[in-house]
Length: 319
Figure 1 (cartoon, one colour):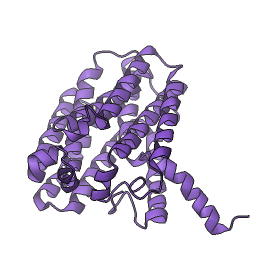
Figure 2 (cartoon, rainbow, N blue to C red; figure 1 turned 135 degrees about the horizontal axis):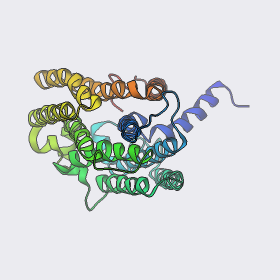
Figure 3 (cartoon, rainbow, N blue to C red; figure 1 turned 45 degrees about the vertical axis):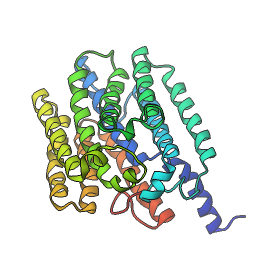
Figure 4 (cartoon, helix red, strand yellow; figure 1 turned 30 degrees about the horizontal axis):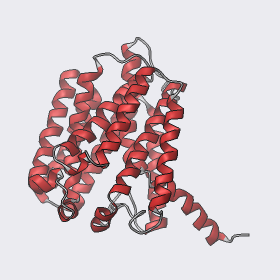
């Protein structure tokens, strides 16, 4: 029988294949997905259970999670060398998981997404296909949107903000034009935090010849653009009277401003992570089960990264 150390290694090995899908990134999609589902229920004269979502919402949630998790995996496959320079996302650069195994896992999760979406409405499947397109073209050539400003922000904004909210809506009711202004508001917020995250990787991106937002505009320019986009999202949320679109950005602005003033890496990381947390808390008011999912990911990630890499993430560490 395997001893305690052998069991620990086996458990960590299984968890490697889960955390390479980057659940701490995928939670951003969850926030807007459940927001869209709640808004669709209200627009159609109903409501979602505060304690457990219905079957179609769960299937849609699983399908979108699989698509985005696969997108995060494809991103790492495409950026092994850049991640090595930036000392982040250690799974492939350190050989913890082989590139071949990563390709196999990618195929599995995207087939799973298709299977979960099969019983859902045509509208949902169209949104899922659009999300898949955004995930593929974000990382893979010839488009490789993540390497070009402003498409790195646009693709992230549309994928996390617009497509996620539309998918949540379509898992509850037919899509209507009402999703457009809401989706664009969420897109602005996500585009803003995307501009901020490029500041953290600017040196490695420039070394690899990538023309990301911060690589093109510089750290100061990208930071200033972040504030403009997040403030615009707050304005959109106020006009639409959407609590998520308003309070998520407003609560985040003070830390984003501090990061711009101090230009401190730790402040930048804290601001980016806080913005995700702020959106999550506001969204959880209408969908409390989201808070349980986020707590599970947060504490699970802290334990995993501490055991595997020796630092706590989310937190001061950067995976």
